[in-house]
Amino acid sequence: MPIVFDASVALSLAFADERSVHTEAIVDRVVADGAIVPAHWPAEIASGLLSGERRGRIAPHTSDRFLLDLSSMSIRMKVPPPDDSCALMLSIGREQTVSAYDAAYLHLAMSESLPLATFDRNLRRAARGLGLDVLPAEY
Image 1 (spheres, rainbow, N blue to C red):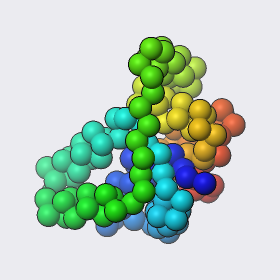
Image 2 (cartoon, helix red, strand yellow):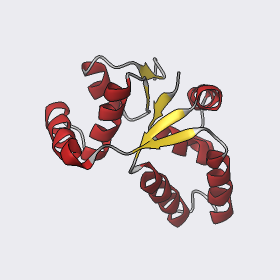
Image 3 (tube, rainbow, N blue to C red):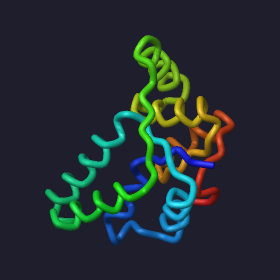
Image 4 (cartoon, rainbow, N blue to C red):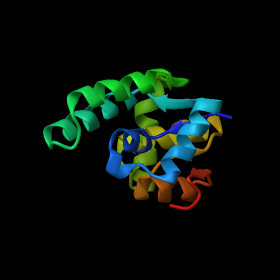
């Protein structure tokens, strides 16, 4: 079964000081079963890499290699229908006190009945409050 793959987990692969056994376990699952991400995911990944480069945490060639590694994984982007997606993300964001970006992850996990892999504490809290499975289970 694929998972919903938050950028916080994906980006932890790019930064050596953020990698952990949790990261490796989730990536192994993505490699084996695939992942689904919301439409804004590529911008989140690029933003995280650019921020890391500008702060001297990662070299541009390392970012490029990371993107090649990501492209080899079975990651599918899911774009919600435009008619009600803004209102739905606004509603989820209000109810769960999360950003619209995080609401998109929650919406995707709910609509696909998939677990959400995230290291973001607030997003983990909201997902659990909605009865979603969260990976890693302990973090």
